[in-house]
Length: 257
Image 1 (tube, rainbow, N blue to C red):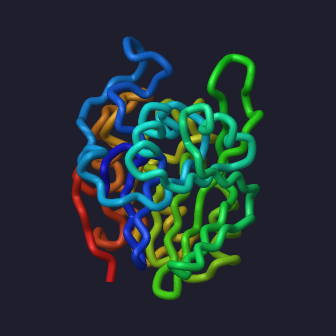
Image 2 (image 1 turned 135 degrees about the vertical axis):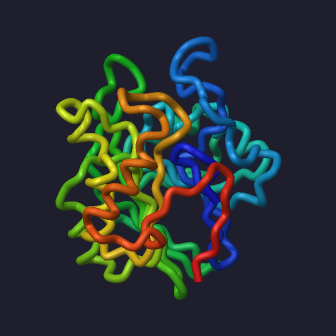
Image 3 (image 1 turned 30 degrees about the vertical axis):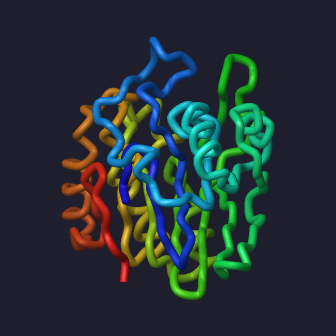
């Protein structure tokens, strides 16, 4: 289920997982200033099923939202998996069950026969003026005996996609970012545009990809709905079946067989 921005509900083998949850009105440390929602979340926290696991890719405010972490902990007390240097941050936000992992480290959930591996991505981190790159950023590969799912988190295009493909083999479902990419001279190293994302889809050899990180907050210079139109063009240019790389509607749920 695409809740919106980079927040997805992934349900696999009895496990309910949230990616980078943000349900707040603003992606900001303040309630009165900062990027404001253009669209409401496709589901409210009160409408979610039991959440077992939350994966957080990095500490930017549109991915690590303090109020959402506090409310999710109060309602579900899930396990949070974060990259190195972020455990204390989310502990201060109320999280109680926290795993902090380096790239390529994994956590096994025996009950659900599921392995979560933290994987490299090309990005950066900062919550304030004096902590730039003091905490790690990452993506996640979530694998059980039926499916293998890849959530990249924020990333520029790079060689890490091919490395992930080499290590994990077939990816059944990927979540790749398609928004917040203009101007390219400034954003290219940290955020993919839809053309980059389609190439990453090919590099990962993903059976199906869902676009993420678009249509919710106006973060960069392109129009808020431009990524969806640009994705159509990129698919056509690279001869990708439209069903193989989709941009879901906010709140839309699809089943992956």
